[in-house]
Length: 271
Image 1 (cartoon, rainbow, N blue to C red):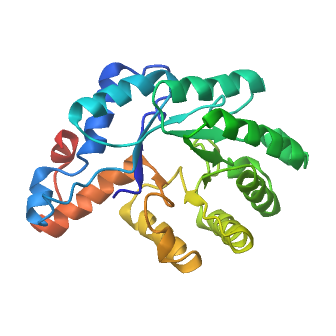
Image 2: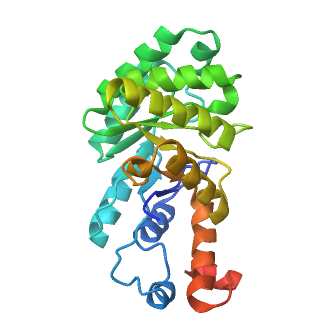
């Protein structure tokens, strides 16, 4: 559970509001209904999601709400012209700085896919390196947008270049591409992580995002991590799943496990 990130940036029409952020933070702090926790003897487990992810302009609200709840939970922010990254570099870097100043402890950045498609890997490295510097102490997750990179070779190269430039995580997708998190692409990325670790001794995290909707999907990604990178990566410091919808299905399956039947749709809506 602690490897799931609840996220607000699925709202794409500019209708984000304080009440949306408030609801998101409350769900992240207490993702499972008390009935489930009681049935599974997990009341003292302090289960939360891995982080709350919002647009930069909502970071301060999320930080304040979580503080008021007495919950220590990272606030992540998508930045650098998410999801396209098609703005000038200077405002992309400033967006990072503003989000960090407002309290974001994690920043999700997007690479310039046009540079990658032209094989201008030095350019990709230089931009991501400047993003790393703008993040300061905040962790940086680099989104490759794999559905727009064209080939598996480009996915592997983009993974390595991002890690060389200082990524703490590499992430499959923004969730807006035609192809998002698929296991075949994930395999290429985690093997790049393994190669990088074997050469440098530095562990980089992995985050699949987009298209992960069920508990079974999440288990498949957990198995991939276990088989390719081992037990050391199965923690929220090195593995996250970017999918709010999968949380609903996990809650549904845990309800069945603890209470013997699936919950009603109304129950999940009120949980």
